[in-house]
Amino acid sequence: MDSFTKAKGRVPVKGTVVFSHPACLDHITPPGHPERVARLDAVGRGLAGLDVVRMLAPLAAEAEVLRCHPARYLARVRGAVPKAGFAQLDGDTFLSPGSFEAAMRAVGGVCAAVDLVLGGGAGNAFVACRPPGHHAEVETAMGFCLFGNVAIGAKRALDHHGLARVAILDFDVHHGNGTQDLIWHDARVLFVSSHQMPLYPGTGAASERGAHDNVVNLPLALGSGGAEMRVAWQAALARVEAFQPELILISAGFDAHAEDPLAGLMWREADFRWITRAICDVAARVCGGRVVSTLEGGYDLQALAASVAVHVEVLRECGG
Image (cartoon, rainbow, N blue to C red; front, side, top):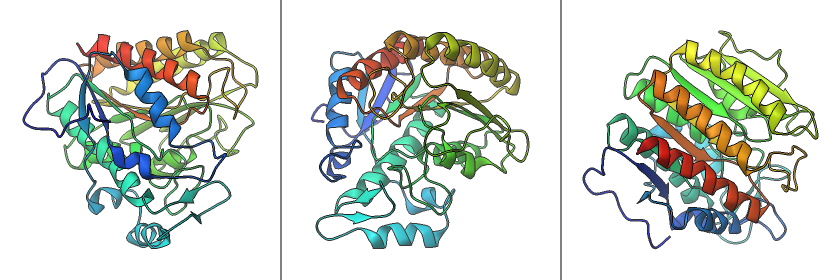
């Protein structure tokens, strides 16, 4: 993390900015937990040598979290943080003494990335923070997630920057139930999620379409690979393009990789390259290439490093 610096002034208009922060290493989980500190070390290996600008993720203001979660939920999460050891919010979601700051840095990184990209300070951005966010529902922490990072970023783009339409595209192997919950009633947001089904958290059927037909779920069968993914996403991306978003946010989970221990899809690095390029191509046509991507899952460390490398390399090629 030593190569990350505080944002001072404007970075070049072209290029990719990566946001992270050492505090995200202080979100500790129990031994054997898949969402572990070593994931960020793997992400760092994937980013090594890439021509990107690196910035420290700021702490989010509480008002940013309140765009998606009620104050009582924010207070409940903060109040549950232990002074030592671990606190458990559900079967697999834990808090340690550093977890609250890490979570606020994850939200702050997405918000700062949105501000920078919409302000013309970067072509696109990748937020390499943890804990992830796409399982956090309005008042429920679950699936390793505390706050809805990407949904909060979308609400900031809409409510602070005045955009009319934003798309959130989620290719994590698990359904983004939290994001879906947070944007279900917001016609300004189009949410698309591909995911293995059946699999945790058990949501994400194609029949779940949002209050304004603003949700597109793409269930993928156990054992399916890149060919099936491409068919599903080509149709969905046509829907995204027709929606004409002014910003595209990505929930970039890399646990659909064939080597990942938590699921059973058969994607390889070439598939993450394809989906990233396809999203960037749509962004180039509809919103000036403006893309903000944020880390979600990915639990085999070698596969995570390799997949992040191709994802951010494509972002760099498209943002430069």
